[in-house]
Image (cartoon, rainbow, N blue to C red; front, top):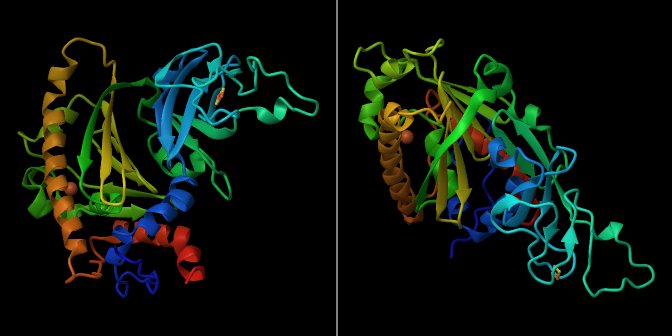
Length: 370
Ligand code: FES
Ligand SMILES: [Fe+2]
């Protein structure tokens, strides 16, 4: 059992700051607070818009341990609800599909697509029973481009566009509305989710950990820009003839790749003709699921898999290199020899920014429950 280090205080001066204590990556208490204060309060990716185009189409998801159902109602609105029946907590939907009503799988109470209670078999409502008060509990849902997001709690929260700022404005020139889901690749990693995010947020490890990627980019120019909940990494591509990216981007109008992270766990990698969303989900304090979602222009046309084969293979290679590093770091964090480290200001501003946001979300827990 690792007890949480509550003496840590985040330092906004990166040159003076120490990194997060190892126990923050290892404690059950921290994982619980992260669900309550972080994953419940920030927008989470839940679906592709293609899955929810028709009235009655729905998907089921889990966010911060909560079962959700996301659907399109009869007024064409996207809606989200806790997937928890108001009778005795059964599921009102399983998997995904299309329905006119949601029917609880346990005793068959039904709900309309707006969440209102419809039928309650064999139950004669007693005096004072309010059907309105027994509607499914809603969650917020919003769409941006081909993505659908949900948020459990809006307490003090920003709208989806505000939270994503400046990504929507900076990607206006890309045909996002036309990008369609093509494929999903999952990787399970034996590390805390923050180890993986830390690793994504710096390019400092590229020379040693990703020799193939290092050859593709101009490492000296690698830069990070931090915004409120977003950071952007910029790595110009080296103009080499045999470069994967140059070949890949030649068809595009704007030969620039944009890499954004949005707190806490989403990464958007934009290219002129495709984009990749990475969703990083904790599966326990030392296990993480990373979901890679590929979106392409006209994904149904013949030969797409072949056309993007080199990109898929390259991404897989980089991911495997990162997985090895992250799993070794997790073991290192458990070592009695390690408690905290230091940031390299030139290279690790994105990591420091992430840790500042974690601190902002959790500090009152850390301080007040001492
Ligand atoms: S729990 Fe849903 S009908 Fe009983
Ligand atoms: Fe990496």
